[in-house]
Image (cartoon, rainbow, N blue to C red; front, side, top):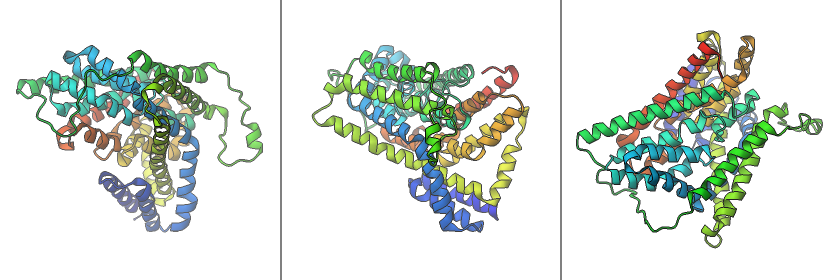
Length: 465
C-alpha cells in the first residue's frame, strides 16, 4: 500500500504539472497525500520535514538563482544578448541556419544567461532566418532546445548553469569536474543533434515543405534597428567564465573561514569550505557580469529601466527557486516513507559495472522526468542518495568528479518531457504546439539521455575523467 501511495502521488504531481498547475502549491499537497496513506502525521510532515528541506535548498542556492536571473534580465533588456544572437545567425547565414541557431543558444547559455532568456533572445532572429532559408518552422524549437537545453546546460565543464552547480554541494567537487568526459559528451550531443535536425530538414525539402504559413507570434525584424555590437555583448559572458575560473581554480580560499560561524552554532552551516567554493565563486562571477553588463549596456536602457530590469530579474528568481525548493521538499517526504525503502533498495541494487554510476544516472533521470525539472529532479535524488553513492564510490576507488558529471548530465536527460516548463515556454514563444514540434525536442531528449550512459561506459573502460 505504501508503494502504491508513492506512485499515485508521483503520477498526480506529474499530471498536475503538465496541466499547468504550480508545483509550489501542489507538491506539498501530493507529498502529504502519500504521507497520510503511509500513516505519517500530516502537519508535522509539512512544517518539520517538507519546509525544513525546502529551506535548506533555498539557503544553498537562492543567491545563484537571484543573480543568474538578474544577469539574464540585464543582458536581455540592454540588447546585449540579442546582439550576440543576431551576429552569429547573420554571420553563418541561411545555408547553415540550423547550426547558427544552435551556436547562438550555446554561446549564451555557456556564458551564464538563463535558458528562458536565451529563448526570447534567439527566437526572433532564428525565425527570420528559417523563413529566409525556407526551413519548416516546426524544426525551430528543436534547434533552440539543442543549443540551450543540452550540453552547455550540464555537460561542458565550467558551465555556470545551476544544473552543473548543484552536485558541488553534495560531492565537494567543482563545476570543472570530469572535463574530458564532459567535453566529449557535450560535443557528441551537439553533433548528433545537428545531424538529426539536418536529416529532418532534408526530408521536408524533398517533400516540398517550406517554412509554412504562420501567424502566431511571428517576429518582425527591423534591419535598421540598433543593437549593441557582439563584441560588447560577449564581454559580460567572458567575465562570468573568467572570474568563475579564477575564483574556483586559482584563488586560494582559507579552509578555516567557516570556523567562527560554526562556533556560533548557526543552523545549516556548510560542513567545509570545499562544499561551498563553487557557489561562492559563481556568486562573485555573476555579480561581476551584472556590473559589466550594466556599464556596457546602460545607454540602451530607457529612463527608469534599470530599476525595472533589476526588479524583474529578482522577482523572476523567486518563482524559480520556490518551484525547485517545493520539489525538494516533496522528495524528502517521499524518502521518509516506509514504501520508499523498497524503491531505494531497487535503485541502489543497480550494480551494472560494479559502480554507482548507472544507479545514479537512472535515479536522476527518472526523477528529473517525473518532476519535469532538471534541477528539481537532481536535487531530490542527490539529497536522498548522494551519501550512499559517495560511500560506494569511495569503496571502489572512484573519484567524486565522475559522480558529479553523471548526475549533472543525467538531470538534463528526461527532464524535457512534455510537462517541462522550459519546453512549454519554448513552444509558446515559437508559436508552435506539442503536436507540431515536440517530436524533435524529444529526439534531443533521447540523444542526451543515451549520452549519459555512453559517458559511463567510456569511464568504465578507460578510467578517464
